[in-house]
Image (cartoon, rainbow, N blue to C red; front, side, top):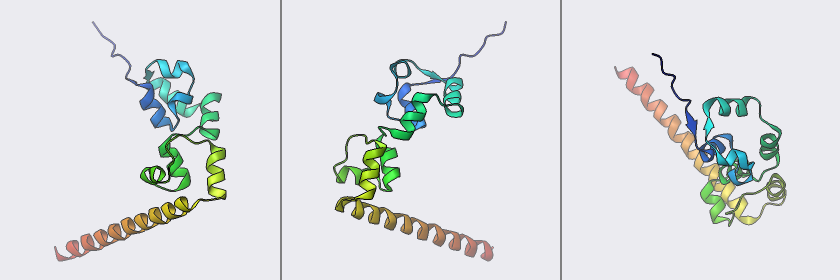
Length: 133
């Protein structure tokens, strides 16, 4: 008696998050049923036209908008961006950045620089500790 294990599935919201797409913009059949691991892998390796179109033109979810604008998700909220944006809207913001976007990008750059400084300091401390051993 061999019993086959059921295929591992994920909720559509999880699959959309991992694919970097805005779930309400996906086709209804994607939104309505769990996605198996095999289906998910197929979507990643061989994306259908609707997935390619969503990735290219949006609307994009907030994490993707934040990444494209080079700000944090909190920075989007502080700037008043609470809804998904299309690629055209993101491009417009990048070409004509409002004051909040300039400030948030500077903040994000400072945070990343500080994180890099801390990481380098930790490496130096680790090397010093290894020399003492």
